[in-house]
Image 1: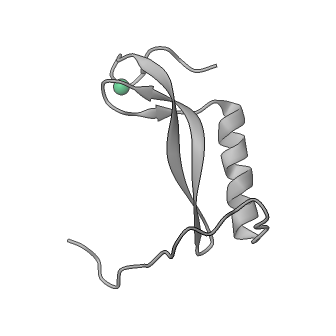
Image 2 (image 1 turned 180 degrees about the vertical axis):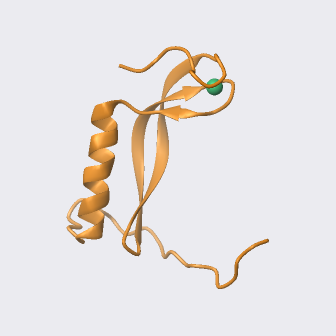
Length: 83
Ligand SMILES: [Zn+2]
């Protein structure tokens, strides 16, 4: 169950499907995740179950158990620090 009120700013939290980027080792995956999103400050909240699943997927990615992942492009690391 998600909190209806944002604990950071007091704004209204609504349920949305959002994109979440996870890194496992050198690999990156984009997940579609159900989250509570604060309409005011944009903070995202996940249920315990969703949080646990995200961590499971992260470790699958790290171990390269890739049956459920579909390649969609390449990821590059830019050579320099942006400052
Ligand atoms: Zn907020």
